[in-house]
Length: 490
Image 1 (tube, rainbow, N blue to C red):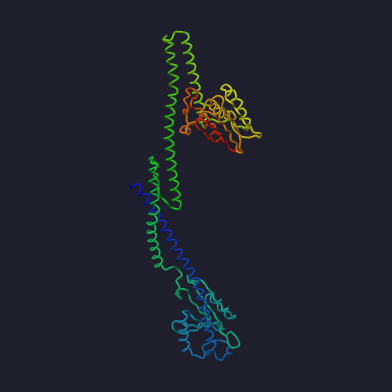
Image 2: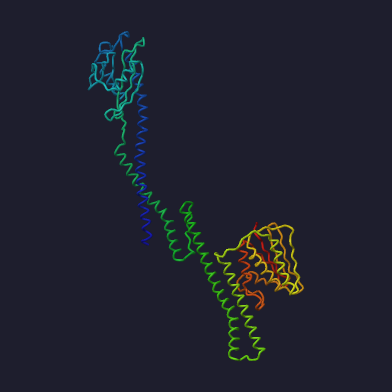
C-alpha cells in the first residue's frame, strides 16, 4: 500500500509545482500585459483629452486678448487682471489635472506656480517641451510623449491666434501618467494578492487533477503487478479517450494475449504429453515384438527352421515399420522447424498433377482401382517446393487407394481461377466425429493395423501450411472422401 501511495504523492507535488509556476508566471505576464495595454490606451485617451482642453483654453484666451492686433501676450494685454488670471489658471489646472503654461512670442512662460501666477523669462526647459512649443508657434497642434527621470511625460500644445490667424502665443499642457492617476508598474499589493490566489488555485487543481491522473495510473500499476504474478485474467477497466485510456486498452490487449498464450501453452503441453505418450505406445509394440522374438530364438524355444524363418520375417517387418515411423517423425519435425527451408522454384501445377497421377497409377493397378486424372489445357503457374508438394499429394492419394475397394474410382482434378486440386475416392469415408481430428498426429481413422503410422496427414498439413495452401476435407461414411487443396494466387 505504501509503495502505491508514493507515486500519487509525487504526482501531486509535481502537479502542484507545475500549476503554481504556470499560474504565477501567467499572473505576472497578465499583469504586465494588462499594464502595457492600459498604458497605451490611457496615453491615447489622455492625448485626446489634453488636446481638447488645450484647444478650449486657446479659444478662451483668444477672446480675452484686446485689442486683437497686439502682437504678444503679456500681463498688460489681458482684459482680466493678474488677480483674475490666477484663479482662472488654478481652475484650469484643477479641471485638466495638468500643468498649464502660456508662452508668448518672446518665449516667456507664464504659469501657475505654488498658488501664484508667475512669468519666467527664457527658462531652461526640457527638450521635449521646447520641441512642443516650437511646433505650436508653427501653427501645429503637437502631442509628444517623452520619458524623463523614470516618468512618462505627456505634453499637448495649441496656438493662440488673433482674428487674422496670427499666432500670438501657445497654450502648453504638461503632466505625467502618474499625476494623471495611472500607475505604470503593477501595484505590489495587487500582484501579491494575484500570486497568492494563483498559488491556492494551483494547490486545488493539483489535488483534483492528481486524483484524476493517479487513479487510472494506480489501476494500471495494479494490473501490471497482477500480470507479473501470472494472473492474466485481470483487466484495467479504465475507459478514457486519452493517452492513459489508450495505454489501458493496450494493457488489456496484452492481458488477453498473455491469457491466450497461456491457454496455447497449456494446450501445447497437453499435446506434447499426448505426443510422447503416443510415441511411447507406438514404439513399445515393435520393440516388444522384436525383443520377444530375439529372446525366443536366443533361448532355443523356437528350433524348427520354418518357425525360425517366420520369427525372422516378423522382426524384419517390425523393424521396417519402426524405421518408417522414425522417418515420419523426423520428416514432421523438420517441416515444423523454422530453420528448415524449402527449395522454392517456379512450377506448373498441371505438370505436378500429371506426375502424381503417373506415380499413383501403379498403386491403383495393383489393387484393381480405376484412376482418372482431369488435366486442364491451360497452365497453372505457382512458386513452391516441387518435391514437397508431390509428397503432399501422393500421401493423400495413397490414403485414398488404401481405403477404396477394388473396382471403384480415385479421381484427380485441377480447376478454378485460383487453382484447386481435388483428390476424390469412393472408399469407406471418414466418420463425422473423426473428421476434425484427421490431421492430428497418431490419429487413426481406421483399424488398419500397420497400414499407417498416423503421421501422414500431419505431414501433409505442415507442407500445405508452409505453402499457404488451405485444405478442405469432405467425407461421408460408405460413399467416399474428397480432399480439396486451395492454392494461393500465383
